[in-house]
Image 1: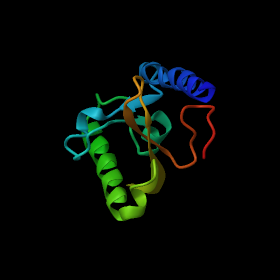
Image 2 (image 1 turned 90 degrees about the horizontal axis):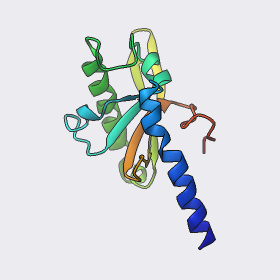
Image 3 (image 1 turned 90 degrees about the vertical axis):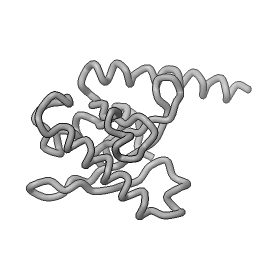
Length: 136
């Protein structure tokens, strides 16, 4: 019983950060494109990952941001499809995104959102999210 209470407290503390992180431009919310990529959860991209993909600003307001968001989601879907049955039992998967001068190694992780719902986060491979957390 005590373990459950601690887990609930940690969940509550960790998940309230997402709304704040979006406002502070630490996360870019690309959820409006998930249906177009045949996904049914919200997805955020960390600002470091967004910048590494060549985005000129941390929002969806610039021309080309729609294409970048959709390309990232399609890369996640393709990596998930390639992972097959083994990938169905993980909460994260690694993939690469092609940019003009090479590739960006990234990770897609599913975890709890602000209200405990599943939400995806795209990070640079090795980047800890939320900041200060450890990478498993």
